[in-house]
Length: 337
Image (cartoon, rainbow, N blue to C red; front, side, top):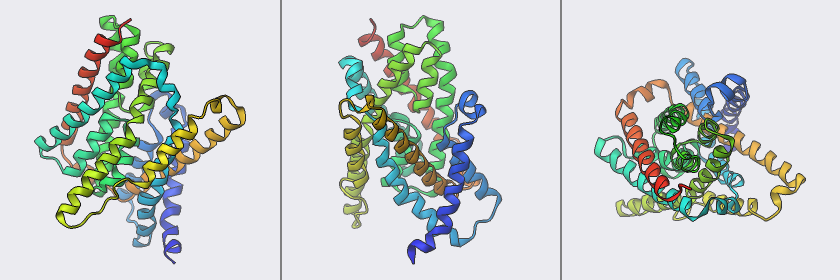
């Protein structure tokens, strides 16, 4: 009966997800604005929520989309990560990624506390800004379990800043005559979304885009340990308060690591049949991610986003400036060839 009661909400979330995925493939969004389906789906969901009163019968399905469906989708992100590709960029670039990611994560959380924004929103902004944008926000929210508007606010801020970076990064590189290898490491180590990293990379050269993509993969590899740590710390805080609510090692992150291991099997990417299957899995996983984020958007109106105020934007901007400056300095020191 519980599953039957969830069907109306799940069907609505699935329909919104399909519309967003179709829209994201249109030239305006894909080639001009470079907006990901995850942002489109949450904006569409929020627009529907703001304009149309949703019946209470949808709530069970929307909650199911926001939790179990979303967690399976996060686990499936592992099929986008090949650990073998990380070897290509070398130890200096890996060092830049690791140091800068964890430093910006700490700085973002500190800045959020200092600015006095909501604790859970601050956690989501910190993870999203330091690791991999929307996917990191989605993964972190499965353990943070923030308010309905927190994920929407974090996604909007991170996407806005990363989109600005697509224009600013190549322009700055040309203005100061930046070394291509340094630029690629800087791009991959500091921009938020993979799509933004690729777009900014192509703004300089195709080879810069390829290197930046691999550097970005190194950041994505840090997602699982960071979210596991976040879940552990929240669980410990919950136990001290008398109500442990988060598992010590979330199951979906274990599956994420297993999926990454499968995707890293030598020769798998060269086999046409396996490559086709992996592509299909990634498409299905993107759809599940969009269903989950539709569940978030359909429970959060634009009024909730406005209520967050300007401070979260300033926190996101401050963390990005910190990460960009630190990663550029380290890339120049250790990766210039």
